Length: 61
Image 1 (cartoon, rainbow, N blue to C red):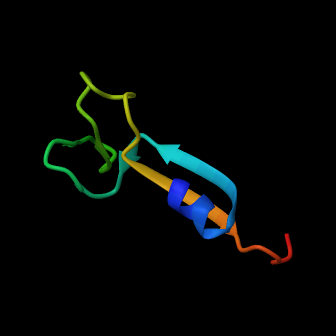
Image 2 (image 1 turned 90 degrees about the vertical axis):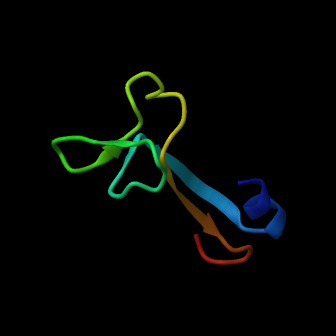
Image 3 (image 1 turned 135 degrees about the vertical axis):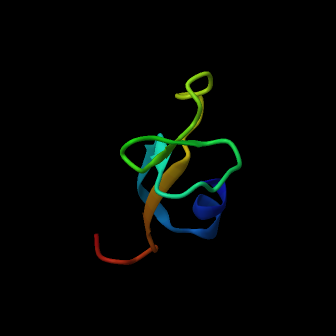
């Protein structure tokens, strides 16, 4: 986030997600819904994915 702000774009939103559709780390557990979640002992401590949308300076809103 800091790098985006320093580069000039204006952040419009940042969304965090507690699960992912793929195991990007060695310890997420795949649940019945097919998504990967952190183990229950650490779930909620950090998001697995996020999306960020930012607008370049001078771009129409």
